[in-house]
Image (tube, rainbow, N blue to C red; front, side):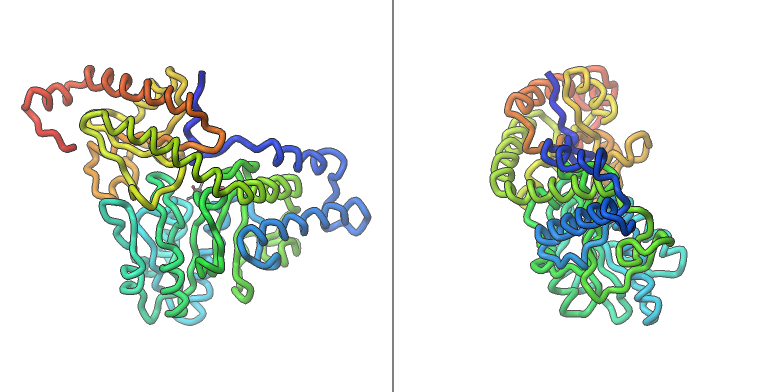
Length: 395
Ligand SMILES: *Cc1c(COP(=O)(O)O)cnc(C)c1O
């Protein structure tokens, strides 16, 4: 038996989404820019997908820009806001210390160009408050960019409150909602978001397709120059099949949102309660404002990579945190941001569930994780020192 518990990295495609894509891979292969009937059929499909996505987000179809995914949407949103700021002589940006690398690395690029980026601390529970944001905003702030929910530890930020602060102070507000869309209610009106990023493969759609929502009136800067696709703001022949798959996956997730949230968070809570019985561990992230599918622990005296490899032998497919940092020896910036020392940050395990996760899979993880943790600790000289009292326990 296998338990796929890495849904924050990517999800299984829904069969409705696959079915929606097939016609555009087979017979309806026209280019939406072509004037003949096959092209126009593709153009109609594209616009129907745009309408579906807009409805699910509370946006207008003309505010939806199709991209290659969440990373591209993050890059374009932030660079566009920076260009708008530059024209007004405003170069201050407010963000958090635990954003996704698609946001952080774009901000790093802007810092090198003279922008002043302020990283708000996220506290021990991994969250920020609207008051922190209000305090940070200055006369020369051109952008606040904050994720709706964290991809590693699952904290859900008070985005509607943060959005209201930004709107009141007339500062552009972007949110990376890649982990939130399809999993918790996301409405750009309620969030008062000026820009929002999402990605299809995080909610059972295909990989390589996403959306940048930009409120009408916001002057986007192109990342890709060329044809007039996406109202001139994102050149390149559209990924018609992928876009259709995304729209159908989003509609499906939106229609079943409250049922799925209930079901998935019950499984999450069972898994968390069981893992908390392991000695010397900590549940990371906000215990209350938490994504329905997120379980994230640090275990003292464990090396996260070995934990993952052994768990895989039991059929449990998890992650040490962000898939983007796997393979690097640096501990996760998210775990350092919530104040863990390196030793603890290295012993992390993220298990992320979806509506396809079964109770049997949760039981498999509940059986495997304690066994693997115990086995790794029994082989660790550091752990022996701690047990013998030669070194203090941290957790
Ligand atoms: C996955 C993810 C991204 C990147 O999305 P891609 O479509 O894979 O480029 C950005 N932000 C967050 C929070 C994510 O989880």
